[in-house]
Amino acid sequence: MGMSGTLPDHVTQLGPYHLKRLLGAGAFADVYEAVHTTSGHPFALKVFTPIGAEAGFVRELAVSFAHHHPNLVETHDLGYGAHPFLALHLARGGTLRARMAQGRLQPQALRHVVLEVGRGLHALHERGIVHGDVKPENVLFDEDGDFAQARVADYGASCVRGTAQRAGSPAYGTPETNGGLSTFAQDNYALALVAFEAITGTRSIKDSFANVTDHDVRGLESRVLGKLRRALAVSPRLRFPSTVALVHALDQALAGPHELARVSLDNDNRTRRCLASGAFAVRRGDKVEIRDAYGLREHIAFGPVLDLAISLSTPTSSVVHGGSTLWVNGQAFASNLEATSRTGPCTIRRFAGDAIAVVDADRRTLRSFPANRYWARVDEPLRALFSVFTTQGDIVLGIPESGTSVYLISDREKITRAPVPRGVSRMHMSLHDAIIEDKSGARTTLVSEAPIEGSFEGTFRKEERL
Image (cartoon, rainbow, N blue to C red; front, side):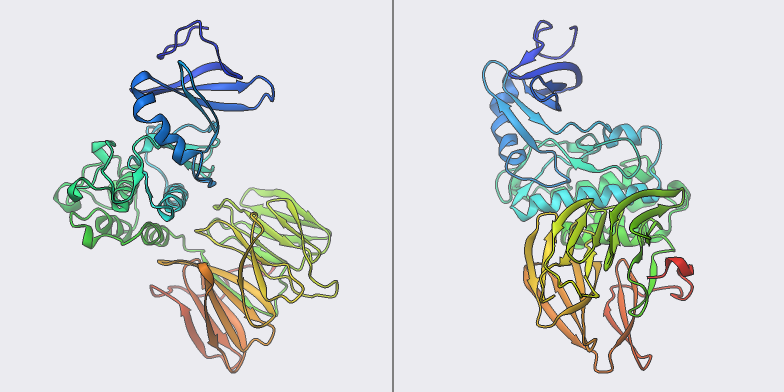
């Protein structure tokens, strides 16, 4: 097998892995497509050079083996000896750099990439890890397509926040040095610069964007450039304070005009619209169908449906509550709701990418799926769940059976209860805002970080109403 790279041509097997072809070569490691000879499963085998084995093998192993997340490339196995290697998840969709070489990304494709990469970086930051080398070459896709799952790769420059910085790619480095200490701001700045390059075709940000016009970004509204201008400010104090805040700002700026919903609590709760994509899910007999602009997409569940949610731009794309069974991405989980229950609240969190559902008989306890772990508990039985994405992360809105209040719930059981004495009648929502309307017609803003523009009336055709 003739393959370039640091391995001799006669080396076709490393441990239980048969090497098929060279995917990429670098100063510290080469990456091969490989197949496990026993299971037949494909992997990306990262084989370290003598220099890389000393400098990055243990460091990369520590991050990729210990931190599991849908938007991070994970290690499944490792090997020592003359050619130390890591067996990684094989992403067949190529790199973001390869996609950018084909032309500027369309707004919704860019939005998806920022959301996916942001999730991965946030997962590292929550564990105190700075990636240190965010660039298009280190963003991989599981498959072809604008909305394929993206993963952050290559942890050779990663380190613990506050420790000495590792050598990453200077082209995506921050203007400041921070005394040589690593900060999360490195990753956030690099992500913003990747987004800027993806829509303008250049990394040049000289003269404070003076040479970049709306025409340069194919008609993107000026607010997108405004968000990127802030994210790439020379002074760290002027930038967004966190990965969540940065991703939220770009997600909101890139939002489409259809991302509004008028939700009546008396409507059939077995039809839901994905605001980000325009697709919708609807119950048809004993099946649930997801439909998009091209027609039928897939069937996702069978039997009775109490509630459902879809989000085609998150790791959890669908959740269907059938009472005794909860279906998450087609995987079944047992539910303890009483057989006579008329409600089975569930929703999907846009940034966290998981499903939140009630599966206990008292309908007060919420669990996160597909991990099936306890998430939060409220004081009253819940009738409905919704979710919005804010600068602080996702907020789940829980409406109890009484309808006289709304619970606002975020991670770590941060729960606020907003009283609605006259009872909740409708919810006016986007992906980032929520307004309640009580039975007298009065409206109260629950979550809003920017004015909600446009009319909610007529947002859905009759068959698509929530």
